[in-house]
Amino acid sequence: MKKIDDVGFLIARILMPILFIVAGWGKITGYAGTEQYMAAMGVPGFFLPLTILLEFGGGLAILVGFLTRTTALFIAGFTLLTAFIFHHNVAVDPNALMFMKNLTIAGGFLLLGITGPGAYSLDRALGKKW
Image (cartoon, rainbow, N blue to C red; front, side, top):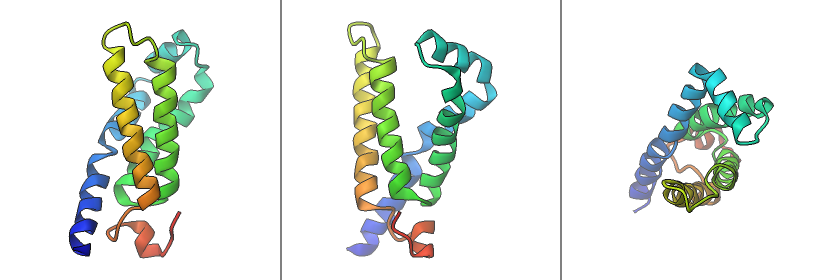
């Protein structure tokens, strides 16, 4: 049963960060537009590099299972924060759906932060539980 669990963790770790890697890359390639959007939502542009680091860098870290628990908890918090900043007006479509999507994603990353990356990860190879 343990082998099945470890394969499941690997599959989950491959699937979970796809959205963040793609979104982070989009912010890198569309930096100015993203900065304008953030400003329009009341978020200062100096947060954009941190957002890119968390989305793109954190997504890659989750993918390979490096700093998994810590990164997953940061992504969970970030996802909750973005739900409340960017999708709080649930009366406007599609904000209600996006808000619930962010809650669901945060729950998945919270679970990953609690359980860890599984056997097939850099964390396990390094003997770390961060």
